[in-house]
Length: 119
Image: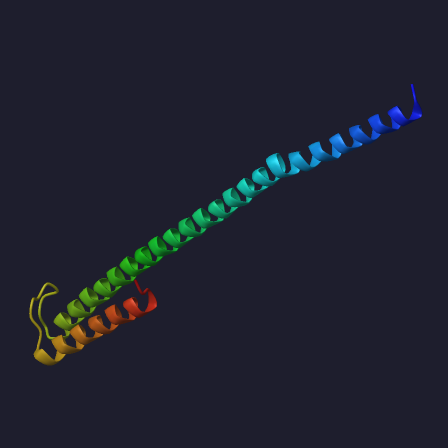
């Protein structure tokens, strides 16, 4: 075999290998890499949505607990004022002054709950 023919064959083989490598890079590697990046971005977005939903549910739960505590405090205060006025624990009316204090305290607690746990 002639050295020129061998040289030409080697050069053609080298060009073929380089061409196949470049083709693989553009046809296989880059699309796979881009798909992986899109998948990771979508996963990150879904995780963020889940995190936000969990935070929202926690805030809703905390607000409900705070409002419940405000109501418990209100009922306890009402009961205490009934005793102070010499009425049974289950009284349904207080002196206007006492009732207003109890109602204002309840409203203040409710307002604080909504400030602390905004929806």
